[in-house]
Amino acid sequence: MRPFYQCPKGRARPARPRQNHLLPRSFTSTVFRPAIAAPPISFSSQENLPPPNVKNARVVPASPSYFSGRPDFTDNLLNLQALLRKYQTLPTVTSGQAPRVAWRTVSQYRLLVGEPVRASKYHQVVEILKRLNQIHPAVMPRELHQAMQIYKRDVNPYAVIKQPSVVDEDGRACGIGRRKSSSAKVYLVPGEGEVLVNGKSIINIFGRIHDRESALWALKATNRVDKYNVWALVSGGGTTGQAEALTLGTAKALMVHEPDLKPALRRGRSPMTGCVTRDPRRVERKKPGKLKARKMPAWVKR
Image 1 (tube, rainbow, N blue to C red):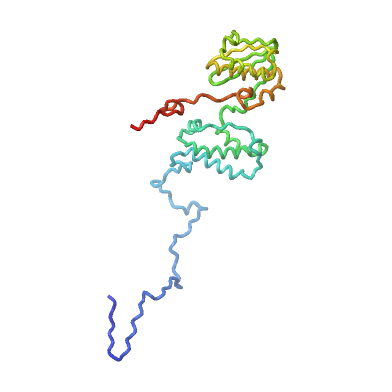
Image 2 (image 1 turned 135 degrees about the vertical axis):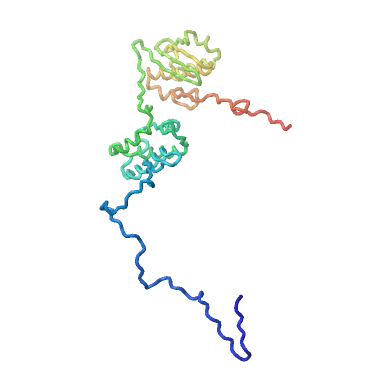
């Protein structure tokens, strides 16, 4: 309780004693005190060092991420980031002028390091590799080239050069076409317009007129129907897929005889007018819980 001060009548009330805890305190002192720290150790001479304690010694791992869940991936990522910081000032080229490299996929990289690496994490590695690959080949360091080598595929598909087709001694030009699950191998020879598919007439192979026109559309679009004979081998799929595979194969064989017809064969965006590009469309697979690829069963309230 606070002290209660009483004063007699007619006299002034005495002043309260000043509280010591309200006075300002000084945290500095002018009194010199000796240092408490240990004396300095000279590491130049081994005599002053204390003897090692073998009981408390432990093996320090070489990897800084040894105790993490993915040490190899983390070490690779840190190494690439360090290389990027080291060589980021070197001259670069555009992405179109840089050498095309096929990097390992996520599944291939997982087998390489033996760790369950996420695709989003591996995407960070690929982005750094693309940036490092843009360094000018003339000034590419050897250290950087060796570090990037482990991320490349064993076989680079971009290094494969396609052999150009030529006309053989018999005047035949070969072209291969595919559509859906069908494939066709077409031989084009200068002639009078005869067409044989699997050794039979085209009328016996394709009953629909649309399929017959589709198979020979490359010749019709260039007015070459009566100038070449077609001998083809088709397999797989149905009649529509085989007919459109013949279209692509015939266009490729025709470009071997007359390369100047490529703009006319490529003109147009519809599958019927564009005869040079492979059509990648396929039937979408059926999904579980659905009647077809997208069709859902009828909804019933009860």
